[in-house]
Image (cartoon, rainbow over all chains, first blue to last red; front, side, top):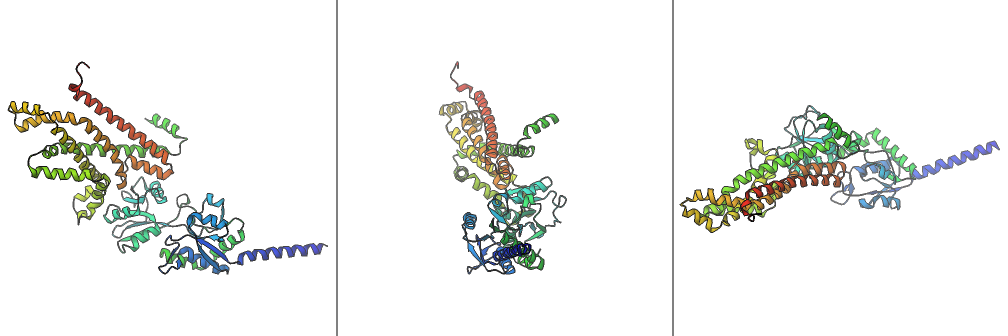
Length: 256
Length: 243
């Protein structure tokens, strides 16, 4: 009787484990909104590519499942998940409390970095109260970069706030600005790539503190798909350990 | 002063938007706005007097360039003029190497130039209209006294023209104050710039802009009051007798 009970318990737990494993190995579809360079966009021949796509595919390969990407507009991206049009969202979605009420997030897989950019001929050390003293810094009004610079350096430096990144670039071209603090991908495409050699990145990519830069981007799942989320978290940890993550990161954000 | 600050702090304790910090942004913004508007009005006014006289000149090489100037600056939006001057100067080859760059680098002087040119154009037309409206009788009387053109201008035409122009000019001053709100597009932290900053920071458009609207109203009220007082003094002779 006792042995039977134990046996049945064992069978039950075996079945449970098998059930979990099944949930992990089933192929899934992932919703994504394009374009948002360099996170997700199409190549000229229509192929989906970007940091999210490459990392997502690497994670799926790590778990050992097939993943299919489904393009979905941003407005309907969470409802689409609920309606089972796809099983996950990996589309530069910032983790926050409001969304947490509806979906289950994976661990953050990236915090979009911000960076200091300066004309190639301006000598600035690693940005700090001393090195930025008396400098004129450009930011886009109302962005998290604006909040960060205003709070950290508003007392020592002049902060010029612009409505668009284009106005800011124009003023840096003309020599009115000593440095700008920008979303790294935007700075890379408008300053480093399009005006090669004129500008440089100063110091390191900045993603901390969280109260300014947020918790980062996460993959969203339906609340009950905890096993699936766990599988992706493990895959992410593995990829970060074995260097694949860094490779993909370098491909889209350059070497740090 | 200390006690006042403390009391203010107590008042603001429950308010997440209007902290001492944001109020100081509004305060600095008010100072910048008043400086910008006042300076451009004063320079514009001084420039407008000779321009208005020249605008009514018989000589076409004096008259037409002034007309072209007022036409261009009244015929295009101030925002466009500001953009052209602020962003346009940098396309002048090698300007960064000249002494001019020291004053044009910061946004204040380009904005001041744009505002001054704009208000001078409007003021020129206001004065020109007032000069043209000088009663013939006054001019004939001056001539009968044997006054030279210069003396007649100084003693007869201009003083009465200024009086006639006063109400219209008061409007121009208020327009200028309100037009200065665009200064924030070239990164100047004027009143509107401060409001936009607070709005973007706290996502509170109503609080940020209602507060700044109230400040503009107060400044406008002060201007109105000043011109009312000025008109009362200078236009006393036009009031009905015994009134």
